[in-house]
Length: 79
Image (cartoon, rainbow, N blue to C red; front, side, top):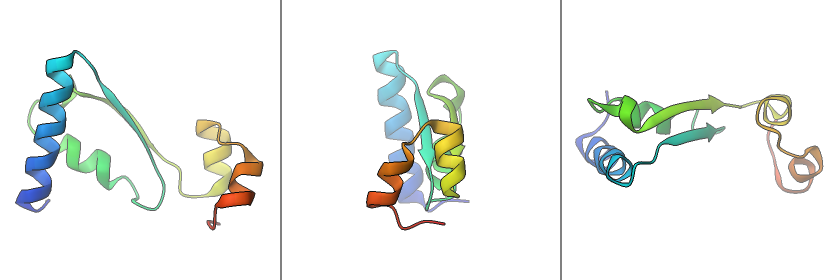
């Protein structure tokens, strides 16, 4: 599904996280979940990827991941 370069970089991120005993959670908007998709396209990714959120609409950002509405109004250009 992903270009070899992206998949290789995702594998490196996953490997680094596992080596450090860490996991990642993504919160994505304009990428529509592509970062989480790339990370989970790598075999064994469940050892490095805890989960993710795709919060495209501003209300989703506020309600699902706690982004301050004033911050979105000041800096965001989404819907």
